[in-house]
Length: 180
Length: 189
Image (cartoon, rainbow over all chains, first blue to last red; front, side, top):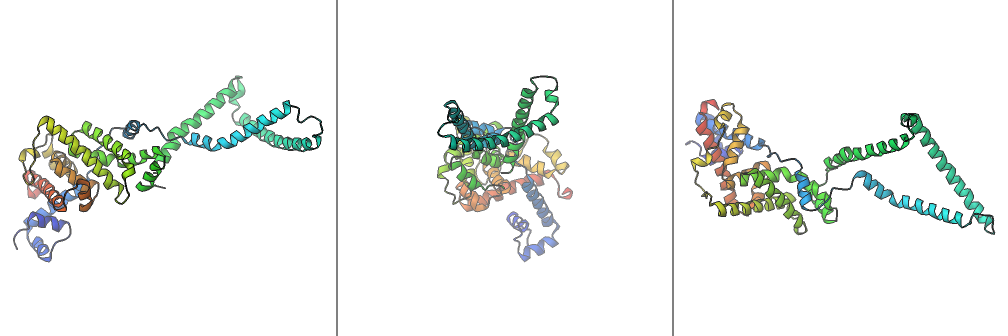
């Protein structure tokens, strides 16, 4: 058999060689060398990495499309909690309005308001206990925030929520993106 | 859990536009590489890749899902690059490459090609050669080896007949081999 042609060498490397070709390559150093070159090139072609992009390419594309960033985790949470917060606020406003209008004073509605008042008292005591617990926890572990300045609490709140916002933007959101 | 391309496409079509960023992040490297291989200029390539993503977004409604998103998208990238290349050639009347002809000057890269071979850094060597191959060869090589498309998928992307795709792939490999054997003796392989 004559030396393998280039297409035959490629076929050999691709694993579709005939028996004749296999026999010839085993006996012909020249064709074996060509096969080896072809294999090396093939391996190198498979190993070629993609070209490195300038940073923030995705951001530039999204800007061109006028599509803003995905809402942050905190914002999504707030948005999901909005109905509950709204309900609490509306209930509170109604309660205040009823109080101003004297709806809870001793009137002919005494019977029903007594029940309502009991209910509110129970809710109030639960909320109060919760707030008291939170307050105790904050003063125990973040006493430094209240030690020297009357603005300590404000500072603490700002730092606390600032930290949550930063955590959200630089840790949680990138993690969520990487999951894709 | 990783979403599939078609799930992301559905999500974007469903109104979650910012989910498109996930597709961009997934395909930006390969799209940019294809652009670099065809346009031979990084700035042009970045613009072309951006154009392709914008076009794909605007045409997302036409994506039927019968083909893979990648194949559909690479076709857009390929077309954007060819359009840019056409404009550039109109402007500069650059050299035309004729199928089947191999010009030695085409395969004369600047830099340290010989040194790459001496150090047997095959990947670096091949990269340099692929960078200077005529775009019709480097595009096919990129689609085949980096994007890992089949011959048939390359036909879909380039709208070339199967025979032409196979011939170009073969010639591209032959060019690499020719350059390799002319730069290094068989004993050192």
